[in-house]
Image 1 (tube, rainbow, N blue to C red):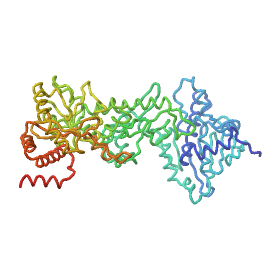
Image 2 (image 1 turned 135 degrees about the horizontal axis):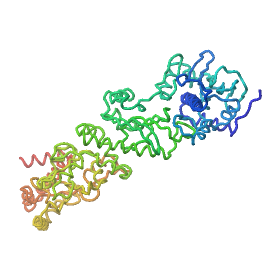
Image 3 (image 1 turned 180 degrees about the horizontal axis):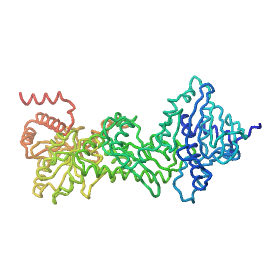
Image 4 (image 1 turned 90 degrees about the vertical axis):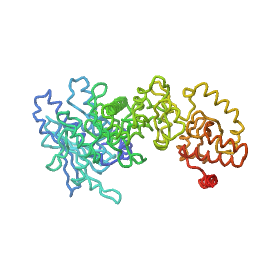
Length: 611
């Protein structure tokens, strides 16, 4: 029999498909099972209008059989089958699909009971990744004879009539011999085949039979109604699938119809999994097309800020390209992603409002993720996330959302006040916080290194600007106080110049402050880089090896006895005054959460004063 050549540059296309399109050879089984499912779907649809089709839905099967001695793996279905001419058309032309043609014929039909997976006609040829010879024996339903198609790969194929007892298709793979680097015999082992069916084809709607056992579930849990699937069932599914000992914090079920139809079951974990905040963690939802696993981790379905969400999405409307492992960035996918983003935000907001304690537990684990989401991509998601942020409130003595802070503000308060520190205790101890506290205003403690960047990116919330306690605030200072401070500044300029010169290289300025009440000194910064930003950047040197530094300012309290002592020393003993200046500088560093550069010198100065 004369061998026929593949059409459409077959050798180049087949080589490309086998070696480039698919990244995991094991998916050949998924492709063959999907083709078998399509063939059964076609016969089911024909049965709607053709009374000669007498097979019952309960009789449809996809069978997998192995022959260890012959090294063959056979995938069979009792679907519509093909004639010899259709084999020529569908198997002789790479990238032509009978499923695509069938789907086009259905576009005007009034039915949603047929769901065709394969649309591009190359999945079948994935068989050549594991087989050096492929035989297809098929008989179309209603025909008397069948046809046999055989090929060793890109060199071509043969097709001829043959006998076949029943309608349907058998795809027989003669596996390649094992080599030092490749073990093709694994695809003859029942345990391996069973695991591949469970991984990729567990939710195919027709029974997949291996030996005498049906190995697929057929009806995915996310297709079941609430009456059929309780929250406890969902939690059990989550724990088994994601190896989490704890129940999920929340389950989000989606059954969407409209511009794009899909189902989803999403889970918000109770705590971060191991390695969550590392570069090795792989986020993403599992993506199915009509029950067939397309991508194990589809990152495009959720924004990075919601990377903690786990779950599955299943749609029959996705446009797949020639490989089911690759997904076009098409309109359907973007619509699903946009809707899921809203669903997750809505559920988190519900938890925050209805179950605040549960939400606080969630925020302990994933709050940092939300904060990084605010500053990422130049604040693209800041409006999405602002409502979900929590910060520790001095008055409430617990973490609260920004909305609660703003609603509790008195009418006279114009700003959202915050204090940054490595801990709540450090933030509460900042001398600069005293004027805000004395005015009766609440202060939010920001203890994560990213917090300063978060509030600067937000700028304001509900039209209330953020204001650090470190910043000058005319609202907290009367006109009389301001005049008195300006006068004291002028009268003590020589002393302040001495302080600045003594600390050359350590500070950029020294000034008197209205912020200070009970403390003699504090450290602030002027310019775009705050002290907390300096602390954050200290671990990230620039290309020149120089860390980013704030322009530090030493502020002194002119009404404190220590300032009087400094003034007296400045007038009588400049050497002693310099020692006082260094002590005040070290004290300011400690209050700001920094260690003195020379602790030994600091302790010596203290001892000298005590002696």
